[in-house]
Image (tube, rainbow, N blue to C red; front, side):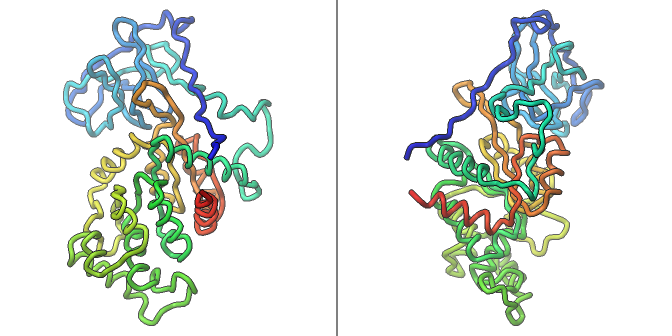
Length: 368
């Protein structure tokens, strides 16, 4: 199939031109103690950030994220969560972003991503309920085909609504099986209700196809949690109960890693749920470092959390730089705006219910 999609080219800063050419090397100060940054530390954004090292070389932070500090290691620059600092770590110090202190935040690395916006003032520049999303869908179809063909890393962030409908659950299952998902992030609820659907064909006691309430259906998710805790893992639960469909089954079948981050609200929880919030963040960060495309469906808190740890760019093994695409799918404009207000400006909203989105997406990608 001929794919029209092409990754936008990255335009690095011109460090040979002034004022960058005469910018001083960045100041470095040791972390005074474990988990504590020196005063005046530089905090990262999700844009490409460069640090001028002693000797004059500008180094790009290769695996950045928002709200980290920059640590210089072996003539490289690493974005490190403040809590992960060790005493004596060489931390970049400076609060300016245009080279004055040897730090440059590059916000225009992918100018062709905004090529359609030629005027300084324009209407309807952000997606709302009034926006026709056909072009967003078309671009996403091509992007996902490109990612699968080129070995990209597509991360899905799922809310439990995905498992509450027979058709959306099946669509997500098939997307995983067909190679359009390299990692899945969710909470206890998504996995629990997916297993409930596999065992009882209900979601919180409601039939996932007819939406009718089943007698004593409110016990179903508690029963599946209890069984999973008895068996000790999701994989063992699937095997012991003979469950052969669903999102978690597809992940286990295809070896797709998943991270289930715990919540104060959790029932059970499932054995794989990570109760320590910082351990969960570290596990999610593994996939943020690898992500080339993120698709977040109907889960505001997980979306914002992962959005804040996902940079707007990725440095590939050959040294080239590409954008990281971030789609947020929700019925509410609030969720998409909330993420943008937390600094993740690159997110593309598609305002619809996740059932329609997934079925539409799968039906198009299945034409192969």
